[in-house]
Every structure is written in structure tokens, then in C-alpha cells.
Amino acid sequence: MNVYDSGRMADAMVAAGYRETVDAGDADLIVLNTCHIREKATEKIYSEVGRLLPLRRRKPDLKIAVAGCVAQAEGEEIQRRQPAVDIVVGPQSYHHLPRLVARSNTGRPVSDTGFPVTSKFSQLPRNGQRKSAVSSFLTIQEGCDKFCTFCVVPYTRGTETSRPPEEIVDEALRLVDSGAREITLLGQNVNAYKATGPDRQSWLLADLIGKLSAISGLDRIRFTTSHPRDMSQDLVDAFAEYPKLMPYLHLPVQSGSDRILKAMNRRHTARQYIDLIKRIRSRRPDIVISGDFIVAFPGETEEDFQATMRLAEEVSFGRSYSFKYSPRPGTPAAEMPQIDGRVASDRLQRLQKLLKKQQHACQESFVGRKVTVLFERKGRYSGQLVGKSEYFHAVHAQVPPDLIGRIRKVLVVRSDPNSLAGKLL
Ligand code: SAH
Ligand code: SF4
Image 1 (cartoon, rainbow, N blue to C red):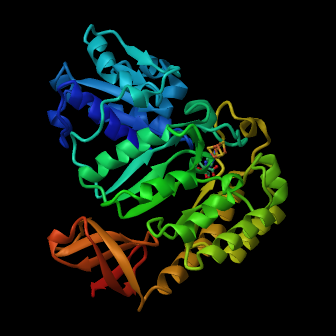
Image 2: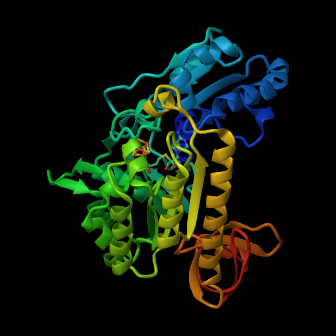
Image 3: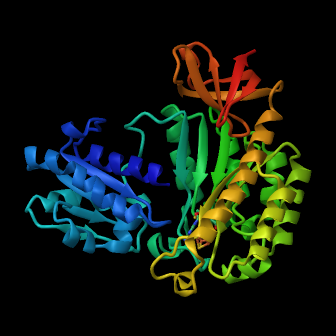
């Protein structure tokens, strides 16, 4: 979502007369967009700003802004600690960025971390002035009301809100017009999407996917990140119903221990998660499932951890993201007795070994099979393009450069550590 937000901030600044540059030395404004989900991000901001100081000395008019969830959580404290930061702007108020930049010209530090009543989306300039990526993001939902005990999202992104379907369809049309072939619908809890449509009916994510499926020129739809509790049967069925919805689902589970899931306030059991995956696979047998895991949540015993290992064995994930629990200030779990760091590292290592093995097995199972690849960009070697298979694997192949933005059938010839090697058919 930060990638999407950064694009929208660029849109806002372009409308205010700025141009994008890839060279920091050229810039009049540098925005550091930040994530607060795990610790270290905050410290990284200060070291990044430190790296910009020589530039700032050469160019006193250069403005530095810190945006995103660290800005939201730390607020003006950032400017107290690092006076070189001119602007602090939270994830719900970045449509004010041009105004904040103008205000900062007085030389005083400026900050905006409010949760405005009207959504930023209605006030942002329409995208389209910039060329869209072949695979583009589109935020449809933001914030979260679930309050998992480890998570800062409800505090930094705010309460759950969904954008109206007509606004989303309009943005999707513009993305397709400016070059997108694939759209990933984004939300912290994307499958909790619920909004009133122009027909005054309540629209859920499956309805939206149906509507977007009708857009010609849009070939692929994905969505992330989902919560198991909000995986309605309609949405499960959508994987069988809509050919444009790609057979890949990221569905975080966090733990395989019911005791820990309860302490996390996840509101589902390990069995419910496993049964849900079975239901999804019965509708779309080839679907690749990926997950998120947290090890060493406060109170996690070796037995709890073994339950997570067993869940992973039973589900078999095609890809996963796993983390050591990281205490976040202001969240309930941060107040609980913490697990020793060495125990946490050891568990993470054991889990990652298993998950890596599963990822490799999944990739190997594609060798000798045909996949369809949407080519997105040039690869590392000359003559090579990289794209994504329908199953979200990165696939590289020797193909002409004019295939960027096109979908082709590719034979998978080899599985590399994080990608597949393919041959154009
Ligand atoms: N809404 C999604 C996840 C959003 S956060 C869900 O409910 O599953 C993305 C991932 O970051 C989470 O799935 C979790 O695995 C990880 N994460 C969040 N807070 C964390 C913390 N305090 N420590 C470690 N990992 C965390
Ligand atoms: Fe965080 Fe996801 Fe839980 Fe919401 S549902 S609090 S975003 S982990």
C-alpha cells in the first residue's frame, strides 16, 4: 500500500507543478514513505535522513518529508529528534502534501497526522498523468477494526473504511487506459470490503471483482491482504467463477496454536483455517496459497510452536512470510511477558526451513508445465524479460522487449531460488 500511496503523493505533487525524478540530487522535495508494522523502521528513518544531510547543506531549499505510518505514530517527535525534517504527514492526510510543502516554505516545521472526516481519495487528483505500471495497485479499503493484540494497523491507518465501487471502477478504467493489464486490489483487510454501490445495494469484494472482470483490457485481478474470518463463500466461489481472478491467495494465519490465536485475538482456530483452505482448494484445485506467520508471540511455548509447524505441514504453503514477534508500542501484546530473543530466532529458523522447503517443492512442481506470464519489465540479463505467472511466481525468459505488457504461454524449464526460468512457447 505504501507503493500505491507514494504514487498518489506523486500525483498530488505533479498536479502542483512538480515532476518526478529518480535522482535525489535533482529533487526539491524528498518524501520518505514509512511502515510501522515491525520495529527498526523508525531507526531507519533517522539514518536515511542523516544520509540526506550533505545534500541538504548543498541545497538549503530542499524539503524533506516523512510520510506513512511512522509519521502517524511518532508525529512531531520526528522533527524534535531530527530538525532537518520539514514535513510530517500521516497516511490519511497526504492529499494535503502540496499545501504542507507551501507552508513549510516559511521555514517552520509542519505536520499533519489527522484522520480527516472526508476521505483523501475524493480530494486527490485523478491518476493518469503518470504512466501506469503493467501490474498496478489500487487501494479499495483501508484501516482495520480487528485489533489483533500484536498489530499497530488500527492505530496508524485508522478504522475500517471502503471506497465506493464506482470510484474504484473509475480508477481501474484509468489505470487500464494508461497501461495496466493487472490490478491488485489493496486493503489492510481487503476482504472485509463493504460499500454501498450506485444501486444502493451493499457491495462486497466478490461483487467488485465481478464488476472489474467486465473491463476489457484488464486481464488479471488479484487482492491482498485478507483475513481468514472475512473469507466469505462468495469470495471462495469467485476463484472458480471469474477467470480474471488469478489462482493465488495470500491468507495470513500467524500461528497454528489455538491458545496463541486466542491471545492474538485472531478470532479463528487452526482447524477453521485448515478447513477454509480445503474449501478454497475444492473450488480452485490449482490455487497457490501463501501465508504470514509470527513466531514467539508472548507466552508461546515449544508446544504452541509445534502446532504452527503442524499447521504448515498440513496446509503446504506455496510461499510465505514469517517474522519474529516485534512488540509495538501501544498494543496489548507489548505489555505481556516477552519470549527470549534466542528462542525466537531458533523458532523462526526452524519454521523458515520448513516453509522454504515447501516453496521450493511448489516451484519444482511447475517445471515441465506451461504457465501464462504477464511480462512486466526487463530482467537482469540482456534479452531477458521478467513477469508473473498466474500463480504469482516471478518468471524470466529470453523474449523480445515488445512483449512487456503482454501475456504469453511459457514452458517452465527450471526452478531458481526465488523465480522460475521459462521458455516462450
Ligand atoms: N491484515 C492482515 C495482516 C496485516 S500486517 C492480517 O490480518 O492477517 C502484515 C503482517 O505483518 C501480518 O500478517 C503479520 O504476520 C506481520 N505483523 C504484524 N504485526 C506484527 C508484529 N507486531 N510483529 C511481527 N509481525 C507482525
Ligand atoms: Fe492488524 Fe490484520 Fe489484525 Fe487488522 S486484522 S489488527 S491489520 S493483523
